Image (tube, rainbow, N blue to C red; front, side, top):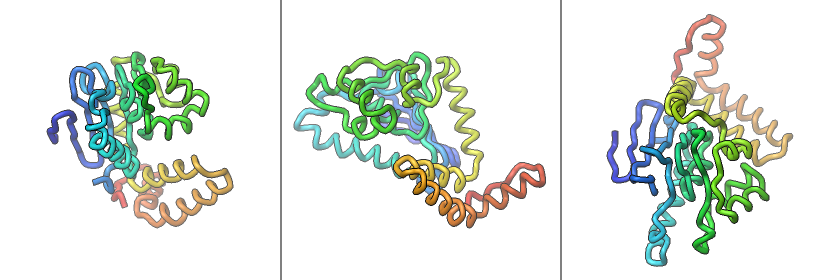
Length: 240
């Protein structure tokens, strides 16, 4: 466990967990990393930032650091998972939506308050329209209303909604299953899905075929996986 002032970071082999711990409301080597879980300690995921950090004398320091978080997440080849409980407002919502997969407790709430301060949420304006559509993205950002976990799920911002007491155990089991997968397979799968998101279908099919035949099948793990299926045994991944 690595100790920092406002986060805990723990890595175990191909899996890592990052936990926000700025109480009371958690204001705010990737080549071999298969899965990163981001969660909040206590009752809330991440309620946002301290407003004073966005004042003129602070914003020049804050914004480069803030965008660096998302640049880092964007360059992770493994799967990033947000496990959201309680409030996830402003940057909390942005971090959750930026992850590859977001799981939310039934009581979780998302939202954006920045417009009330004469600002706008910079990451949400770039990412949210791709997830929920332009009209709904503008509504959520401009209305500043709290967004329930169910509403976020219905709008495709959240993958699953779970009972509050079930969230932690579910995420532990889910991340464990991903960590047991072949690194090349899951990383290339993520790359293919991301590529298809911003391509038309014919282009996506061409890119996927190339990724599958050239990148994936030249790895060791697919051949081990096929042999294991034929021989009815568990595969032994080399993660190569």
